[in-house]
Length: 345
Image (tube, rainbow, N blue to C red; front, side, top):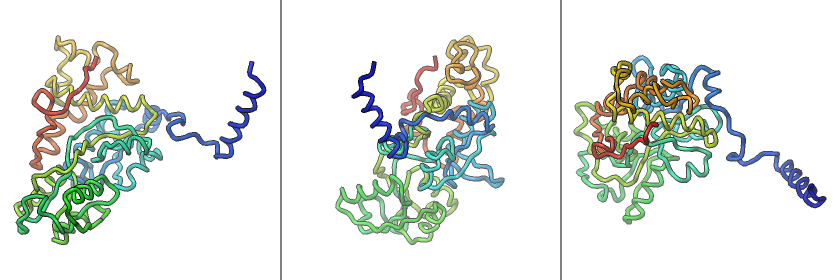
């Protein structure tokens, strides 16, 4: 039986909570059921960048194309059985986290670096790394610069409110160098500013810089991607912390793309793989193991993912390979890369 003292303490605590607005910390709030919300809505709302070639960029019909956009479709296919039910919503660098925190979007697949502070302080959880990247520099060939160490006193184009800004300041401070930042939020305006010669260098993820250079066509040789990478940029998919069932679905969708490539299952072949006697393939297809039910999905969820976008290698080859971006460390672990999926069993 509670004592009078314990009852008084409980009452005082409740009163204090009321005075503070009755709100618990975000991490202590009951988690929303994102899967149920998506099913009721009939669509997954997924935040991407507004225009980053290779990752999320509208085609001539206004359809968003790119690796990040394909991850949106892959998750929609896992949940709803149809990749076209991904409602892809462009978000700015400064608004992307607020959009996810507020529930405006269900997940963020937007060239976003996984960092401690973002996961610990923003109420977000990163479900996986879809591209291992690093921050680099693009410069004008006419300037004769061949190394980032030659950029002392340079004007540098970059977006505000990103890890790029902090990495740049750290690098120049470490090497006793000075720079003048040119901060522009709109990515298209920022690119035009650099290409017009108003900045000596442009810094962001090296994959995005390589894409920008290749997109200049016959003028690509006017620009040089410097060899230095000044940071680790593990680009990942983020969801709201606390809804761990949805987190599991997003994480294992990523792993399904990698596993499909390991198994040699492609967008074209996955529906004909039922005759395989490989027990790992049978589990992947949902024929045995009930893995889908464990995730709250249909047992053929992984088949739907691959049917929608292909395996990870196909996603890369469709979106990033045409831009001349080498796969490098983004190869599977079996080919010397860093991508490694836990067993699906």
